[in-house]
Length: 98
Image (cartoon, rainbow, N blue to C red; front, side, top):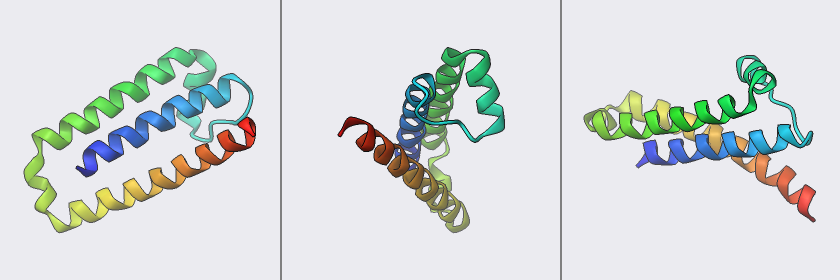
């Protein structure tokens, strides 16, 4: 289940970042993704979609790893980080729309 949540958070991060950067509302802080956004914004979005699909498929294919305590802890930490990023996106979107 955490894989699906992580895949969705990654996808939403991509869509919100794409929208925000394209409209000059935010900047991308990841140097690699920033260059990709500057070079070809649609490639940025495509990469985020592909990474999200990869995360979801990895979760389905490697389901036994979910019982590994360290793996589960790492996955939970990554989900928490992406949840904070998602909350930041929602915050600037709220400010923009009010």
